[in-house]
Image 1 (cartoon, helix red, strand yellow):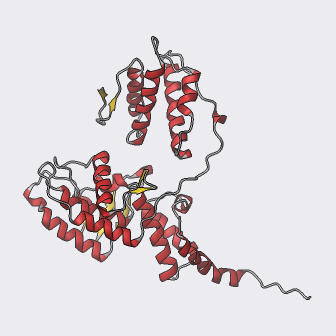
Image 2 (image 1 turned 45 degrees about the vertical axis):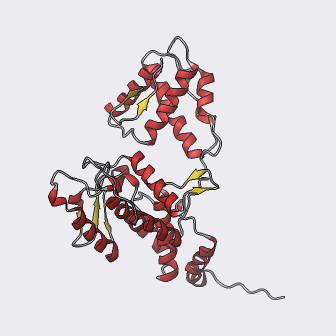
Image 3 (image 1 turned 120 degrees about the horizontal axis):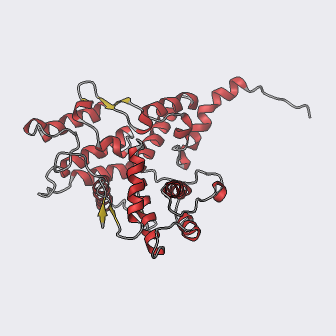
Length: 333
């Protein structure tokens, strides 16, 4: 196995070098190529090694096989793999290596067909309770304190995984109850106000962690070494908590994702603002979009997956608009 700077191992094989060279090239031109993109490239590399014998080449048959949509795979995941595959092929051609570039019309137009899992309030309570009862581990002495706190931030603020894991102590204002998210996705920075209860909890958390004891710790949710918790490590801890809470899988097969907490926050916030606060949907969407760091409202709209009992909120929220702007039509019978 060959490691890159992200500590993600690439399989040994004839095509491994060109794949790692492509990764270095993407980073050398300033592109953010990490996380799921690296995992996708690693899987492409594995398949290329499997179907390539003596000479480094990316044949048409290999490309079509890699690009094919897998069972239970979202179209977005497939298209992202195809995007990386095209970029790799173009890089190989520029380096004088034979490669087949998949035509643009290979797949149909993207249709957002993914449905996330929305945690109920009862499930959130079970998850936090399970996190609160984590046992101390000498291998990871902070984790039983960190997990209950970071999960509350996910459910209470709807942050992305990287935003929460990379949150620095200097960007947490516990006096005003505001998180400063710097240069996140699409280089967007924003201020995230917290509820009074979450702010009070984080004050207790900071006192319990006693960061003054170790001034080398830069992040509010540190790893055992004091750095950023790796996404794989956090995912494994999250799944263990879900299992302990009895909220582990969908249909016994698919794990609920960390990102589902962000979907859950947006859905519950939308429901509360329309039903409890009585705001109309045209007011609610820009507020939520700005709060969670979306660059446009359409991104937020894709997150709205209201349960059946909440569909009435949309109808209620639009009633005043319809009554004001749409004239009543009467027919003489």
